[in-house]
Length: 219
Image 1 (tube, rainbow, N blue to C red):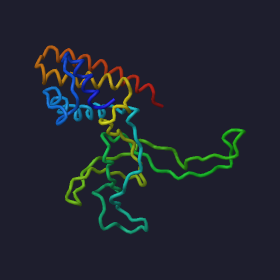
Image 2: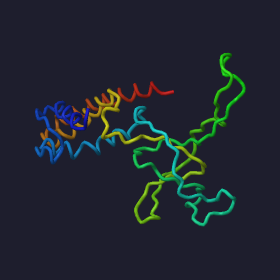
Image 3: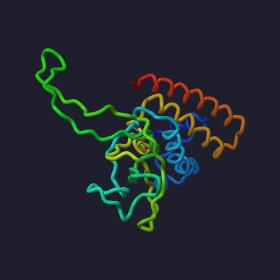
Image 4: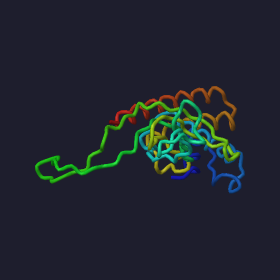
């Protein structure tokens, strides 16, 4: 499955009997130009719209600034007040979900079951209600997305940009995506408002169903 395949499904759903060979410059037909225009931004929008399980990623964040150095001295380049830490937002992040703290592990002598002599346990519970805000850093002269928080050693759980990797999508998300994309292609290629409004309702129903199933698969 490729972005071209997804676009062809959307074109077929939108009652447009055109199939494309790829995006420009591979294919410069009106259908290919329209698919290229809408595919990436609309797919990213749909991915950002819900905490989809298939696009969940968790990483240890890169620290940019801290208010107090590890030796206890005040930093000469602290983050903006009242925050203690500023981290770089991952470049593939579409939506920041929550922060948890990186935890070292220890080996316990208490067996988890009678058949185990020891096991690895976290030092603390993973608290997910940690306040944070998104910001922009201009220290290098180039805008960079950052995260401001008071949590040290923060890991971010976020929605990864999988717009160019349809093979990673859940099948029900694919159905919602093609229905959603079809509504924009109808508006652009056919200019049929009645058909477009009908397609929007189809997309909404598919999206609601996909979100419900995805939510039921979580902890």
